[in-house]
Length: 429
Ligand code: IMP
Image (cartoon, rainbow, N blue to C red; front, top):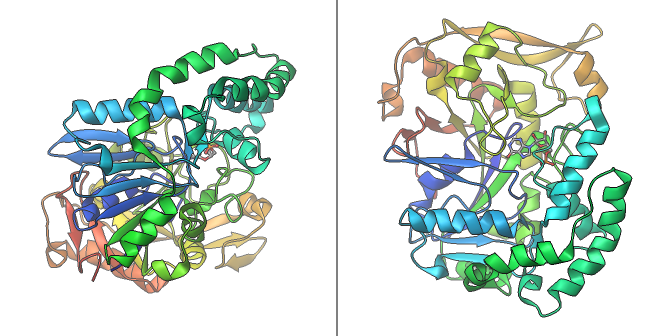
């Protein structure tokens, strides 16, 4: 009877997919509630890699019902490809395993075109979006112009596309981009509607609340990271949805009493993709080393991720925003070859030491991180499966984080594989 919420503590790509997959073993339902195909969750099972952008990361466990709730922006073409790919690989055998809310927002090709046109127009000031149309689709939702998932199956879909394109083509003309045709978009959608129809769900909020009433364990899967939150992140270099814990309630349509625990997925170092302030960024050979060791290239866009040390000031901010109860510490194995590991414990700004994350990004741009160094463990940890068997330097590193963040580290990831996971207590304990 537990609701567990998994959120990213940093700028995304922390390893949420792996944690969701690991814990889906014991949960009956996994719910995605915000974001869209800008996310890329990578799962490695028996050496085989699956990358998911829209479908919840519980899908590789046939007993876990996967729900895409109202707060998600769904690209029908992308999700159709994901479904086909899963089926080809022997997953998603039962249609009833996946439910897509009729009221989730559609991303259509004009959203992608506008996303890219706007970024191009911004030039050096671009946000560095994933180009997946996520921002323009959320804009349409906020201005009550969006098409929703159920529209894909309605008789007046073509008319809705014609109406939408009146404005979108005017915008594309403004950006000197080619206009789009309703017929082409319609024909493209018609190729996937038959495949998607079995997954329609009129009211996913009701389904989730029924599961809660039945006493089922439910996992809520956040996408992106807390520092990319539209209200509390490093605005304007953020995504277009709220990525912090509170967003789960809104996107799913449930009350706070459904959440028993918030787990903050935290990479043992920090990465960021796209533009915007990054206090601990390393533009030297250590940064290049982390990029190589961690294979830090985006699973959605292939872009190289910027890398730096773990930032405890930002982590504490994220813990505050989310009410994080436990930390899952990811990619520890990527630090194994280093002599010493840096950790940022404060920012220095105009002679002051800041311990709280500044809300003004101009402060972030002008500050210097205060970095402490801890000894590295210099051992291969990829086969360790008990906390007590981790090298003592690594346990000290974890103690340091726990002490600074005043939050327990209950899960440690020592490799990409499902089995390379160590936890102190069960997720629903
Ligand atoms: P958008 O979400 O595509 O609009 O991109 C806005 C910003 O969020 C850009 O800096 C992206 O790189 C970043 N972003 C969006 N989704 C993710 C993600 O899943 N992981 C990491 N960064 C992301």
